[in-house]
Image 1 (cartoon, rainbow, N blue to C red):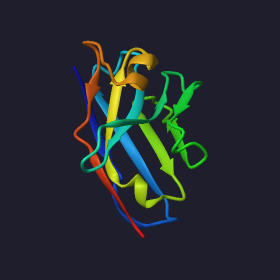
Image 2 (cartoon, rainbow, N blue to C red):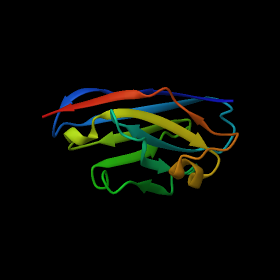
Image 3 (cartoon, rainbow, N blue to C red):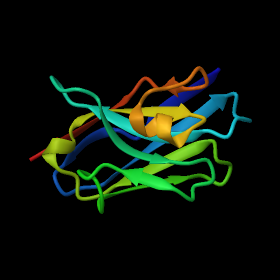
Amino acid sequence: QVQLVESGGGLVQAGASLTLSCAVSGRTIDPLALGWFRQAPGKEREFVAAINWTGGTTNYADAVKGRFTISRGSARNTMYTQMNNLKVEDTATYYCVADMALKNVVEGTLSSFGAWGQGTEVIVSS
């Protein structure tokens, strides 16, 4: 079993920056891809960004390209996402997601190896 714990959410003004983190525990020997989904009030959960096990491949939703940067720590069991120039429309609960295949993470359709975190809230005020 893999456990994911998100941190770094908060309340900021538009144009500010935040860094979200996701810590992986449990079966950390598995080569997991990691990513983020977000869900705004009254909306469906949507893909934000993802990174493969080595950190050599990243995917971003068009809405965050050029503003968000996803990376992994040297131990690979922590993921960071630097969010710059935040917009009001970035307001959502952000969920960390993990699975063996990057494709599963990007699509949000997880295998038995996958897991979701509990979420961290980001609120961007105008």
